[in-house]
Image (tube, rainbow, N blue to C red; front, side, top):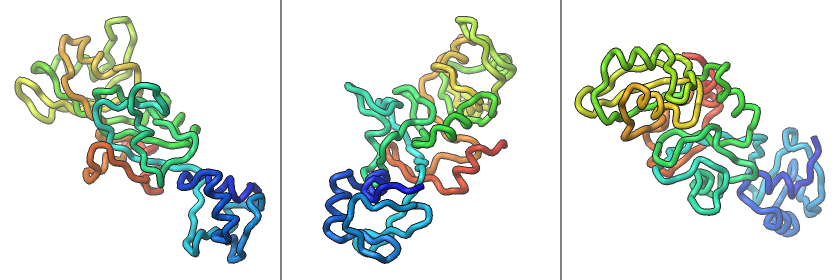
Length: 239
C-alpha cells in the first residue's frame, strides 16, 4: 500500500511528523538509494528500502514490547493523574496507538505486553484461545491442598462469577507461601478474588509469563524491550 514518506517515518515513533518533514527537506532521507526531498512522496514501505542519514530505517507494521511493570503504574494508554505503562516506553520505541494487551492493577508487577496490533491482542486475551498467563502470588496465610484444589477446579467468586480451571503449584511453603498460578482469562482482580474466595489474601502478585514466553530476567522494573519474532509466535503457543 502506498503511503506518504513523512507519515511512514513518523509512524515508527522515533520522529514526529514535523521532524520527519524536516529530515526529508534536508535531503537526509533516501528511498531505494535515491534522495527524496518531497515530503508527500508515496511508497510501499514493505517493498522499499528507506535510509535516514545513510542508516537503514526499519519500518514495522506493528510493534510488540515486553515491559517489566513496577508497582504504582497504571495499565492504560493514558491517564490524567497517574503514570501509565506507555509513559515507561522509551521514545525510540514509541508510536501512535500503543496500548497494553491486558491489564495489571497498580500493585501488581511483571510482564505487560504493549502493542499496536489489536487483532493479536484480542487473540491472546480471549479465554477461548486458552493462552496461559502465569503469575506468582505471595499469600497472606498458609494455603491448604483443599483450597488449591477448589481454585484449580474452577472456583466461584463471592459475587457468583465462575472462573475457569487454573493450574497451581506451591513454590515456597510457610506462613506466607509463594504460589504459581496459571489462568487463561483475565477477570477484574481475578487472582486476588480467587484466593479471597477461600479465605486467603494476596500480598504480592507478579506476572512472570505469557504463553510460552517468560519475563526477561535482565529487565529491571520499569524497563522494556522489543519481543523477537519467535517470542511473538511463542506467546500464542500452548504448553
